[in-house]
Image (cartoon, rainbow over all chains, first blue to last red; front, side, top):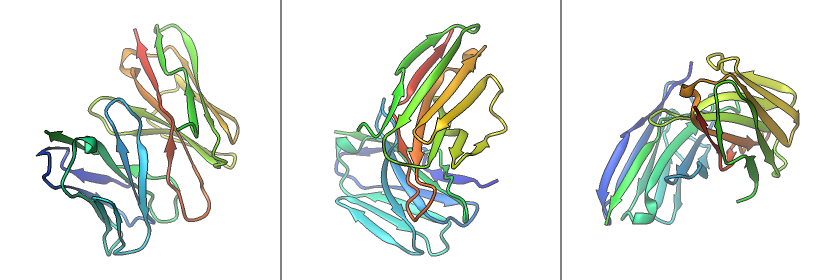
Length: 111
Length: 114
């Protein structure tokens, strides 16, 4: 079955440093979704990318979808303590609506 | 956020009890999901209901039984659970049609099996 890998599993940064998490799927995705889960909270949808090579920005967050629609990345510029949480990527294989979630990358920001 | 609600928020039950988790979505979506989230494990999809179709993860034990009476309500019936079933149970909803498949999660039910 489809597998979605995410690296790294954990990332410690000093406040102000940049952060990147990578997502790779074993199969071509119809789209890629990114979610954030704060400690003690539930996953919250951030963004969806659909087109090959698509890049979207939300303030300090930059999301990319690979040309082959099998990989994606999330980059945060100048992290803040409010960025703390686990970031999940998720994507349905082509023809499906049910996404497979990655294991997530937990971001820890030290003030 | 009140788009997807779950009750109860916390549940402690013994291994011989029977309980049910409830989920309700107010977003007009046509797909609803149950996930299990354990510490140090990825989100595990348990069941999906969409347009009268049910999809299930074959690895989910039969002591978990879903019910979806309509497109807005989803239940997870629990009986004779094991301590390893202690986890956060998340409900989510999404659209199955169109271009946007993003999922909206409820706050979850924190389940402890004693």
